[in-house]
Image (cartoon, rainbow, N blue to C red):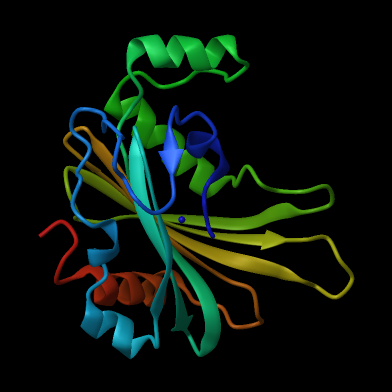
Length: 203
């Protein structure tokens, strides 16, 4: 975000798809509609439509199906999260998670690391190239462009662009993955993301 990044979503305490009734969001987590982050005009330009949305105690987000760089049916994923409480972090570590971040700085670095070195890599696949570019959203932000090879003779792989933003106690990410031979460079990826979020994301 779908393009869910594996790490953080595995240690959410309560999650639901659809109604958010009965959930008590963690302190500092925005509760407005996460699907409104990409506005209707941007979605229309990308032939986009909402696929699903989620809400948990520590995060909420949305994903869309869009056309990017002439590639149709691309998953565009957004998630905003806050670090876990001390008690829940300890509980997660007791259940096998390693080094659950307790503060926003550590949490931000973890999300950036996951974008740089995706945790869903399978046997035979590898990260071919990664480029990071600091941007001007929130208190701190970075665009990460990562190229992955599946290790097949056909040369199959993907290219993933992720914007990670720290704003106060909230860490947000917006990402998309291209699976065809079409690729974008960092300038093109920044232009695409700026077009998506300029009117509604971290104004």
